Image (tube, rainbow, N blue to C red; front, side):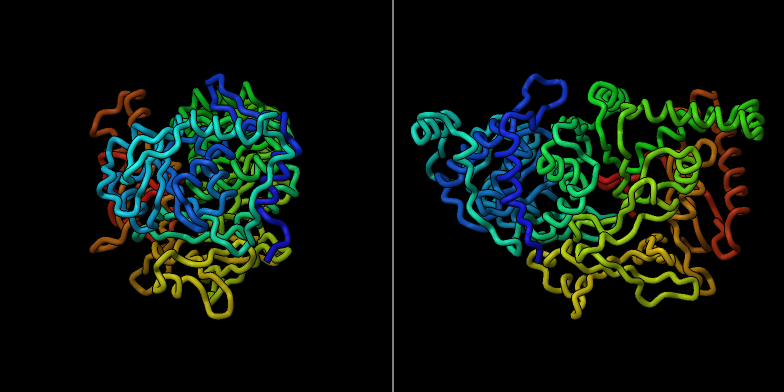
Length: 547
């Protein structure tokens, strides 16, 4: 168990940075200092008291990234309750299941999302509050609770000279207490409630906080969903604990909005998912590299260096031009994109984690990153890894243990036993190898691995990575159908329209892709058929395809 404590870290950050800016909703004039955030937290504590919320009661939270989301989160943890973040992309029926399964008593929600709910379907729910105003919008209780005005009045009565940093004193909570229950939205299987102790969150914050990733007072552009473990732990919790200024992009960010925010705020670190860089590479870099005279010029050493340097400079400017590194997580990075970024010496790295580890398991900074890997175990007791039952290629299931680990799945003893071993390890369900320097290379999921005709292991993600870089392919999914492997392909219709391809020409292009793909694959990995898919594949919030 760690000596550092997240509640004490919240308290210390607020006191030491009372007058610094903490939260801003991008595009709105509503910046709050750390001191103003503390005032809002205190008011919510009054609210929780009036609702008779007890230690370890569950409070659900669902909405877009914004200041109020983070205030509700911190207020819940510092009060002694358990937060249940719900991804706003979840359908109402799925969110309702989470609320009822977790037995949540309070619910902070965006009013637009609340329109799809009915409080009578929530047996344990007592009060529902707007995530924009913190005012009550629905109740199952006989009486309404304190209004925002009444909470302000209570604060003024208790602190007639004003609430100051000397007044901030959160009740202590041991590290082994439950901080949150995060319901996974994985690529396979039914959602499960991951029980995350304060210790696991603190382990992630501790690792990131000791690195030169986020400076005090530096700007953070936050666009990953905060209800997901990746965005929550690093964009939000680490930034707050490191005294950074968080700028929240509330809606799904378009490239235009992101580029504008990066240019204005010049973040020191960017946390992102592979999809962002893969789209930039495919839409902006590949067309340049595909030009015949560029292709020729890249064969000339001195000229090649100039061209690649300009591409690198352009890419760095797209992210604000003043960052320490780009940290990619949530899904594997396409190999071609990975190799190219490494070739131009772009400052990026790829980490590996999962909700069950809150989330980080392995990481290496850009100057130590090995392409195709996802870094090394965190060390110092935070995380260690091993490969279990490796085959002749050294590929086996990745096991992890350390301070980052979950306590198990909420009210699901059967799945918890499948997850945790008797000797303290956790089964990740991922297949990988570890090199002599400790770098982890993920090959695929246990659940998604396919078997060839003679029992060979086939990793569909590796085939899809090759196919996705072929002309007019937006994304793909390789499945095992009767007769062999089939590639479902969703075309890049924007490029199809731009080049005025007919349906016949598109089919011919896909057939050519099919032939070229099979040239890159072993005989047992050959794709038997390719089929056009009519729309984008359904995604998880971290933009992995749901299989």
